[in-house]
Length: 190
Ligand SMILES: [Zn+2]
Image (cartoon, rainbow, N blue to C red; front, side, top):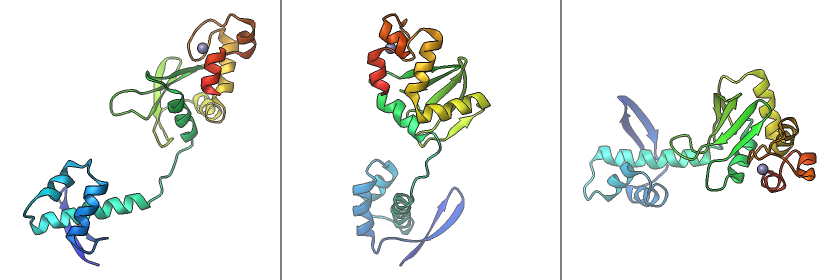
């Protein structure tokens, strides 16, 4: 195993490379990190300095380590998945008793779910299912319920307000009133 040192943000990082030679590193970076412009610039250089070789080893070795580290999911991963599975082209909103959840369709927070308590933003659930923000005890309890059974909460909202949790239409036909949600929207959440 070969050791290298890179200087990252003024800090010296010494590490053992997961690769035996620089060609192996180049192949790995081309295959696995073509999205990384910095890595690709290094790979395509005709002549590379010792510092640049060390950086290639570093990027590739870090990527190997990252891919072997299991991602820890937060408590609301199921809810985030459900929201995004249900989303079609536009962003997807669910109104629940005292709380609204919304997917995000642009910017850095794509993949997160925004949480609103009585129309005030109180936090976001990250794509890995962790809540960031200052949610009240009520919201925390409701998020737990929503994580387990979003459809059930949507129906409760429908019964309380007489409108559909998803499309906001007035629940008028007897079946929808009984269900607490329109049949098309129920299928989306089901
Ligand atoms: Zn509806």
